[in-house]
Image (tube, rainbow, N blue to C red):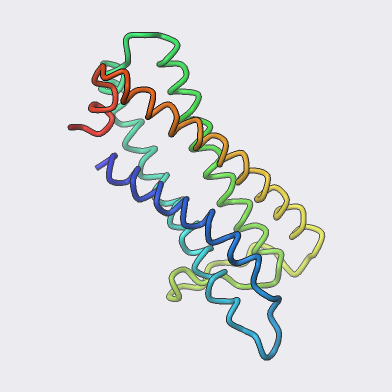
Length: 172
C-alpha cells in the first residue's frame, strides 16, 4: 500500500506545484471572468486530499517502523539522511497544505471538498492574514521543491548503487 500512496502523493504534489504557476498567471476574477474559480478549487481539493494521503502514509510508516528498521541500509549516515529527509518531506507537505488552507480561509473564498462538502471557513476576509499565510505557503512550497530535488537525487543515487535499497523501497 505504501508505494501506491507514495506515488499518488508524488503525482498530486507535482500537480499542485505546476497548477499553481498556471493559476497565478490567470487574470483576476471579475463579473465577466469567473473561470479562475475552478482551477483554484481543484488546487485546494488536491491539496486537502494530499493531507489525508500523508496522514495514511504516516500511519503506515509508524505502524511498520520496526520492519523499516530491519531494512535499513548498511551505512548509518544513509539511515539518518533518510529519516531527516522523510521528516522534512512530510513536514513541508503538511505546512504547504495547512498554510494554503489558512490563506484561503482569510481570502474570503469558501472551500468545497470535491464540490460535495463545504469545509468550515476558519477565518474571515482579512487581507493581512491572507498575505501572511500566502507568504508562508509560497516559502514552504519552494522549500518543498528543494527537498523533492534532493529526494529524487537520493533515489537515483540508490538506484545506481544497486545494493537493493531501491528494490526494497518499491517492494519488488
